[in-house]
Length: 172
Image 1: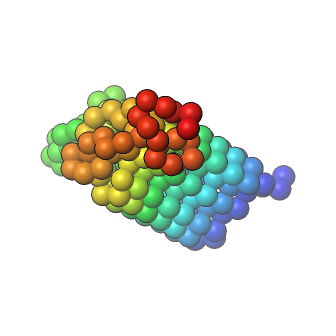
Image 2: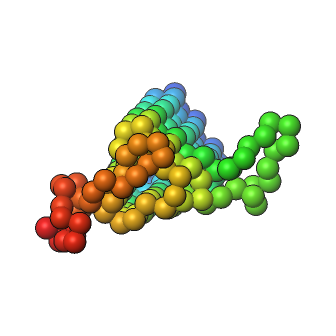
């Protein structure tokens, strides 16, 4: 059966991975067992997708991103270069955590996470929210919010196209 997606020969795809039609996986990627990637996604160079991670349709993951166990990415999300997800709040090398202790992180439809931003586990990124480059997200981000800084603070709102809006009017 002919596959309806593309994977560069330098990438490694484990068994039991589902990749949707029209998706491209670029150089030096590793997609782990049980991962599900939707249709028309673009997985950039040197991306790691952990076991059982779910990624929606039309997602763009730029270079050098690791999507760890417990992270869920909905449709239409943009993950900027080298953004970071965590899945344990207090990791220890000598006292590893059980997978049942990993905290979930959800990135909702249409959200954008800027280059080098860090998303601390256990938080959700709202629909169409915009995380500025280098921000450190330590709490939930509301739908349509723009957050920047360390720790990330809301400085405004955007619409679905990413244009700045009046905080009281989502439909502008």
